[in-house]
Length: 147
Picture 1 (cartoon, rainbow, N blue to C red):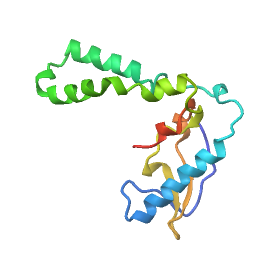
Picture 2 (cartoon, rainbow, N blue to C red):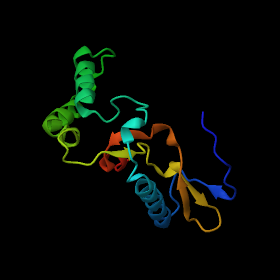
Picture 3 (cartoon, one colour):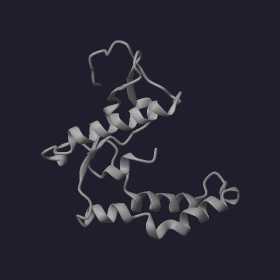
């Protein structure tokens, strides 16, 4: 468990009431990444969810689930399976680039969504990113965008 000081007059949103809130959320995660950009030794941090962004492992797990078809749904999701398989050759690009040193390894949040930003109730300005249980080492900033 982690404990943080209570931040009074703050709120968070499940749905953005306007575009300015989304801009502020982006700024909060940008600050998070900037503050950790020179973290001296990211591999000291614990990997809380092993293989979370390991697409080769995820693809292997996906293919196993498809082949086992345990809940007999395969006939109703053929288009979705085909969608993944048609893109399988490019799914490992980010992992491969990290392994080859073509992308810098960084500390990542791994749960960058609007609900994980605290906002000032009066000004609607972002205060900070929250929900640090998925912060992990040796990722890429690309992992934190697209949620």
